[in-house]
Image (cartoon, rainbow, N blue to C red):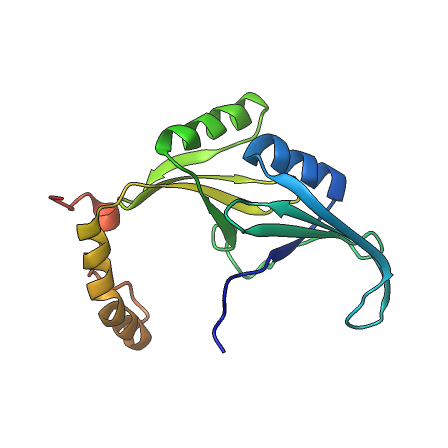
Length: 179
């Protein structure tokens, strides 16, 4: 067996309607499906839910569950807030910056852009507190080859030392030179 693609990624949300509207307004995701039950199909647990699905482009689907009978949403307090996030690719830095301007005009705090050399990013939170990243690729084939050549050495060094290997420090320290 080989995985064909990710069918959908699902998160919890505070309010399904607000979530659908927010993702439509700021990220241009179309609302494509709603499923609601009073019983969980897999476990048969009595637990009403609204499950909404959004078109994230190119066959990618982002879904959310509103669970009104459960305690309020929280987050993993042992994991830094910057770690768990959903990164979404856009067509250009210009498009990313337009999205940033639109969000900021409506009072949404946006961090960045951050230059990762192979892509630039902005970061923000949705109404449920999920951290999102918009990315615009800026890398070259040479950069991709350099990272591909180093990936196993980096992983093996990390497995032993638990310290950041220096093979790709050029991504963030400004030392990359050349195409």
